[in-house]
Length: 359
Image (cartoon, rainbow, N blue to C red; front, side, top):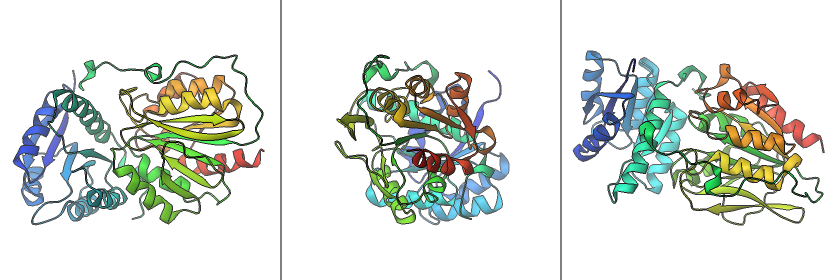
């Protein structure tokens, strides 16, 4: 293969540096050019060889990860993936990191079981590769291995029947999928929505625990109410539900009312939660009442689901290449002909407002 992505690992734990080095080096797309125990050692390494992407520990001695990230973005922007333990305090800090310019988040790999490590390894490598290709200028800031089997939404629920009868309802439901670059892009969209916006359900690829902190941060910034989804939560006007990390989120229906189901299950399209799973459930239970929006992210999760939504009569939208941090998921959907409209990030709030006004 051609040029390998050059990765630099910064973590004060020797065990984490070793594990991450092994995980990344096993992927033929990635070359680990070095590791460092703190930002000062890392800065010297970067003078010798410039990395394409950095994994950065949140909490380190001498200089914490957020401070280093801010200095890096101001002086020598490089795509950065933050690496954190699975803690509530760490998740709050990570929200600062995403606001400061980090492209994505990974959990420090745990080695409890071979299966856990294999799943984590696939996810970590995909995130690092996606981050390396990120267009940092498009981050809306405030100033596996490839052989791993890839499941489809069939693993969680059967394909929708095209003849399924739909009870009449006038309620719109907005379904959004995003991955790399999506956290700040979603913030930019949701901040512009009025409090009476139709109910919104979001799958943003993000580890467990972090989604709750992400939802709290958005809730404090937006006129709409934002929360991490719980099983059975109703989809209400003016409310946004975000899929909990490591759980699939499905749209369901009882009479004319929508609610969500939170489910365990295998990785789908290499992800849990998976946009394909949400979009398929929207095609099945909301049909023409739904709007599907696929935003920035690497890979193809959500592309087939958006096509299913379109075939069920939903309005479908993909973010355009010019405004994406990573033009992967929308590109795949566009190539399938699944997007009725292709719009810039700045136009997505207008599309959502228009959908609400149609009814």
